[in-house]
Length: 214
Image (cartoon, rainbow, N blue to C red; front, side):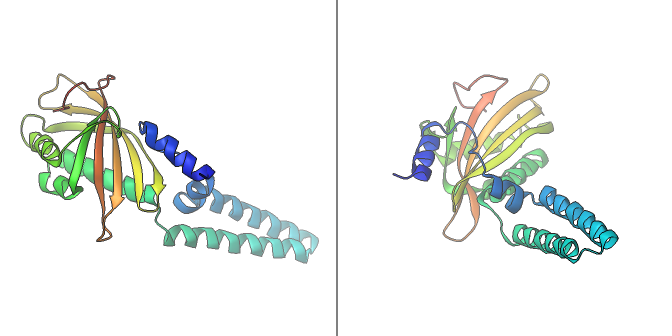
């Protein structure tokens, strides 16, 4: 078993946090702006020095920095990572929950999605339980306000990622804001659409849930 396979196996054993994202993925594919800005600053500095000193190599270095910045930006624009797909689906779920759009929420889940308590590796409940939870957001647990405190995601492989979501939520049934934490395993289906395959409630008001969160 190679290092990558051992790392994936260790992650699958705990599945209580989103997996780590590599530096290349983080700063080139998902968030290229810091590197693009640094290359832009380097290009300006080299161009100025080259002009002041009549240095062709410095000017050539400035051109190279501009080209490198363009390549980084275009690469990030053309590639959507599994983590980005996971964050997009998670944001869509939060938006739909806040708006009470139950149909949109259901559409974000795979037909055989499951609900888990404490960890994505815990024994799961079937899709019907997720649908019952969604139904409560249109009635007794309607969202009055919500603030996202954590949203990060990392890949499992090319077709799956895990998102880590934290909120502070006030509902029609709560006595004030309640912090809550979730994990979502999001996978690309055979139709190419990314959907939530596993949903795990990891904490409600700072405690691991011992029963259904709704």
